[in-house]
Length: 404
Image (cartoon, rainbow, N blue to C red):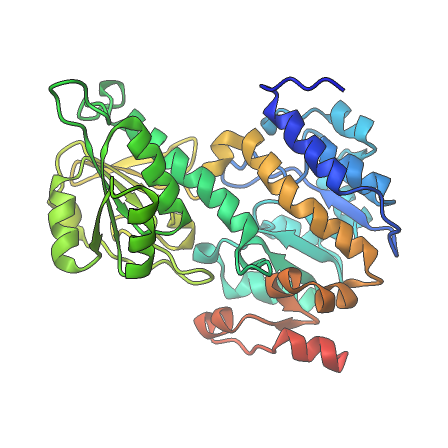
């Protein structure tokens, strides 16, 4: 077969299909893909290629009409891959034993969920509340959060991919809002001969910060990366051959960096917890007029005190004459790329779920999915969530082992 070297999407999905040949699934799963309705969400969890793999493994896929249209996947593509098109979300929820989606279920969708259904979706830690968790617990839903799925190499594969996209996109976004057409300072990130580049301060040396730094350096900007983890700062310095400037994220260095920064990328986070707030109102007030803040961790509460969640349809606001871009789901703006990224991680897990005799066996065998579960057998199974909301919790390994 001839492959066009520029057709990266096809190359990626063909590689995935090759590595996921048909297996002897222990049972057929009924998997539902509803259309996302919240926060300008344009992604979908599975591509038509991913659906074809699952169908080949004996599973039934139900997809709501037009669920993939915002990521430029048509209903006919899903139908040709073997999915059944559901004409309403309520119908899809009734037919499915497993719901796979991107954003957490809305209040309406929670009402449609069936007892003992499996839910695989993001959790959005910054916006989770006890009512949401209690609804899942009362219905006996087994809920697995993308933020918690952790592979054997201690990586969070879905989180990592979305952070790579977010980091790269954050700098593109900032460059746009520095332009005159966006009422910015009217400067280029990279400058030109004889004119210094813009200064980009990146808060956090994790994956988002790393990819933001890569993109900013690609533009030719002067890049500062700040964190309190010296090992991570050292790793980035070595990775970028000391082309970035690093500093610990203490009050003195943060205050100085923000005074000079044209762009601040907020990427400070702790996996599975609320983002730490590093930047105070006075620090933002000291920034240049028309400078840009992109808070990429707003879905985990934000790391800048002036940040307030915005949407793709109304993405920015000004405070202290600083442009704030605080959209929780940045990867949704490149929905097709993000959907391929989600699909390539999720499909192998769904195949493994089918290969197991039930969710209990799968969670026992698969450490990544077991780590991803936050509600199981009518119990909250994440200590961090339990402490945050003062709710009781049970260890999932004990629940599985005791067969409660």
